[in-house]
Length: 351
Image (cartoon, rainbow, N blue to C red; front, side, top):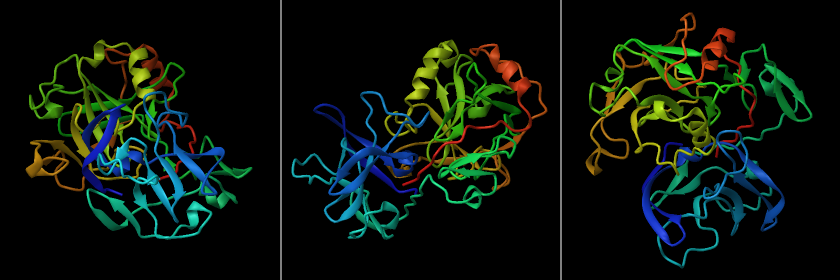
């Protein structure tokens, strides 16, 4: 859901604490069962890397979904309700109603959520990465050994082959801005949270895309579109074009919207909540003034007119030249792509 705890108490390093804005959707993604590990006789599910669904590297630690004190809970060892040492072993941030269900998917709805106080009826959805028939794969793939294998020519990917393969190139009408999916050297799209990452490769003036000099954007900055669990963010990576692709890739492999403070570190725009696999047809907003009086997202100025039009459209017929700061393979990858770029299948569980 879109629940937000504006002053989460977080241990950022051993013995050092800070208040951070916790947007719960930042923790959407894949949670995998840790072998035969059990807590109170039930499986433990741990959040995995948003990049390739692997383990996190130190110092980042994934969240957990486990059974504790008669309920299923969502918890993180470094996020606490307060600095009190009296916090229970459960230390829950989301908690199901009391249940003896062994299977997480059988836990009753109406979870409680901590947002500084306890709120009830939190929106939470969990799905299994398995399938029983091809219908469970939306007829876009085959169910083989309990997993959906999406057909490469079907134009879909995802847990149940439900997400459309994205447009490789998108354009905005407001500033003649053009955005390209970023590729690895093997022409696989760079992705976060199961969605591709786009880079701004052309505009009338890069500063126009960010409302003139509102954010003091320079020509050396790298402007990207990154999905962060439920919304797309327009990020400004300062002097990003001067950073090697290898170093940018290292950061991407460990990206997490919460731990990297995505909304406050260079975020200039934000979309409406969406489950789409690419940002076409989704309304976006420039982030304006920020402060306690404006709420956690600040003042939002629409990037499209009229509302509901969406800020971007597919623009797949455009000739693409590798933008400054990227390898020449970007051009060849675009030349090889068709009207849609095929994304690898990933198992997606959204708590």
